[in-house]
Image (cartoon, rainbow, N blue to C red; front, side):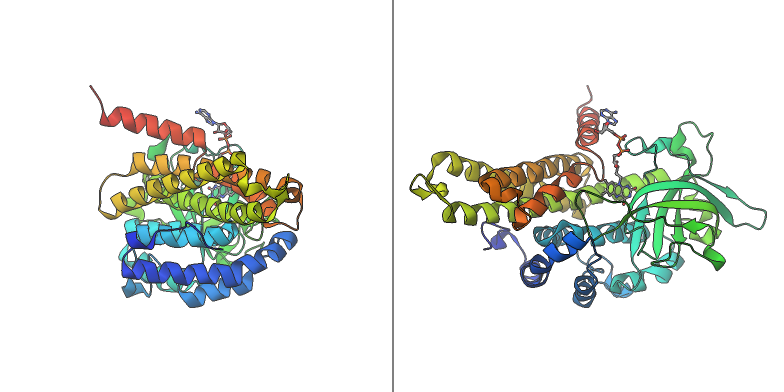
Length: 404
Ligand SMILES: Cc1cc2nc3c(=O)[nH]c(=O)nc-3n(C[C@H](O)[C@H](O)[C@H](O)COP(=O)(O)OP(=O)(O)OC[C@H]3O[C@@H](n4cnc5c(N)ncnc54)[C@H](O)[C@@H]3O)c2cc1C
């Protein structure tokens, strides 16, 4: 039951066609299979293979590198549909999207030519890594380092945490300190394009010293792996510094913060997608379930809940698309992306909880899809910056824009 979802009148013909295609894909291939992969915590390889065929790993990559060359707005619409199916599927694409954005915006021509053609087909998938065991929100506090060796290569040491697609990706955009004494610390941070063997826990040969421990067990967001990364004497050639050695050393923090801005639009779209699915489930269940002689949808308290859910989803979607459109138009969207991420992720959690309540006891049963959504939704409050961090970003940007 697809109801009250993205309004096709606000879309271009191309956006309408691709959104409908992805919605059909979600209805036919993601939603029916999600229960199995979630339950087994198994990587959904057949779904990912289909996504490769549909070109979904190259949506924003320019056509000259084999991608579709679509804008952030269209990407956000696609992410909403994938997340409506299962947010783990959008998680498989999300870090890849951030990696390709980093290459498109900051990479050298040589780096773009080396990585983007394989990334556009999904043959090579990307992850990105800022967080560490002791540091998440306070990115400038990371401890991992890279130092230049006599032969010109760089050696990375340190431990990373919570890397989505950490095992199966073939390339990880990893932020480390190249000048741990820099003041302020962000001036001493650099982003390395760390290559590795997809699926290997212990890398060997040129990539020795890059270990991926077993995946972290999570309450939700299953199927897509989240891992630690251990760098112990991992050698990275200077040409793998994002943007090249001359331009890239010391620029990693700014590069990653730029990428997180588009990442926030992406997480906002995921909030809209999961909320949309929760509303659909609530609309159906509330018309089927009867109490006190009538469908619960006929009780005003339930109708009010449905009304609030739908209203919040529309508002979240509009905020998300506004942030994406500003970015596509080349305008500042830091404040707007923060607002979209904050509101849409909170909406995702609230609407899922309302739908869960509408399901009564059955919402607590693994037989019902809402149980999975209830475990999945809280992740959106954390990734790409928690709600507290979004409020800090919004507050700071507001004051910057309205300085007296
Ligand atoms: C499933 C999953 C996947 C992830 N994937 C990735 C990934 O692919 N790559 C990656 O780099 N990271 C990833 N992360 C990490 C994620 O970005 C961090 O968990 C997040 O940034 C929060 O950091 P933290 O967990 O260290 O919490 P902390 O920074 O320790 O924060 C703890 C609490 O304190 C609050 N807080 C912190 N500072 C302040 C402040 N100044 N004012 C008020 N409140 C504050 C926070 O909002 C939070 O509520 C993932 C996390 C999860 C759970």
